[in-house]
Image (spheres, rainbow, N blue to C red):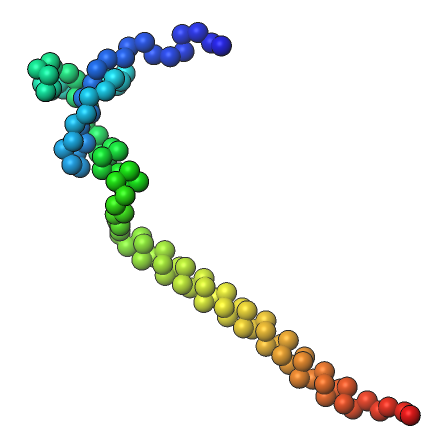
Length: 115
């Protein structure tokens, strides 16, 4: 096993979720110039994050639909167009098979049988 590959500058840091304002105290190696006074009266470095386990839809169970520049609509349109094209190809491929079925009995009926 390699030695000295893990950082050794862990310290207590406050993380603040900018979405909902929740702050939590943990240990980290992340650098920060800002500080905040915590509930215990001590001052700790603070790191502001845009999303954490308190606001992420996976952890909260709330699904958020973020539609930036109509990306979801564009995807839905492409999906519907692809499904329509697939159905059209299937329909087109099925038509020659039906013609062959209709022609086959007619040919068989024209055959002469000898007794």
